[in-house]
Length: 236
Image (cartoon, rainbow, N blue to C red; front, side, top):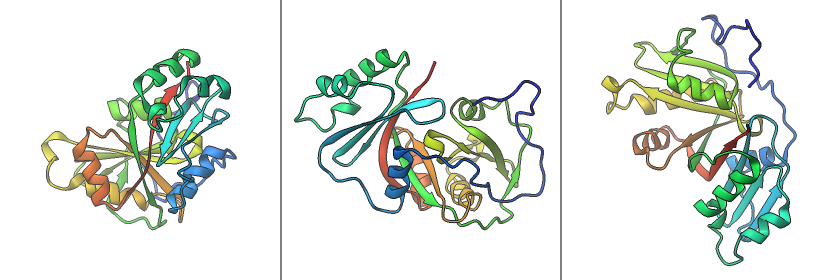
């Protein structure tokens, strides 16, 4: 994500405002994701669509209902030769993902559910900017995959909200709740408050492991909608 030597990892606390859409990206994967966020999905035609690698640091396999997308520097004919015609779930299978990783010189990440909410551009007083959380494991992971990373917390510092520009320039959010504060609905409150940090009408995406049921329930309770699943391949 290209932080220059000597550049602050995170901005200091200041006047809070929604994040600007400063990363316009012209890529078909971004177009698909934004369109799906509005409820218009690719046709369930069992197709495997291969497109160029997206800008940024990761390639991806994205599975919509009955339509798979592979965004990576890979020969489409090689991809189709590795996939059976009668198994729409094969692009998300372990065998194919391992093969694709070997071709890309990378390791497949986790299979995540991708959820989305729409930014409303109204910033309230539930979150404040943090400049002291750079060493947190969740923030470190965000810095590996995202640019323009910003970290916020609730009034009691019971959790973190991390925003940044990720796959194909989309705006992504992740949350972390302090173990002592879990089970009280704080995750859903943080996920809901994060929507106010997104520019008006811009989709805000969250990636959640299906096994992380607490996080999945928090985003669903906050009004986020599942649109697809994906696996990322961090480039060497």
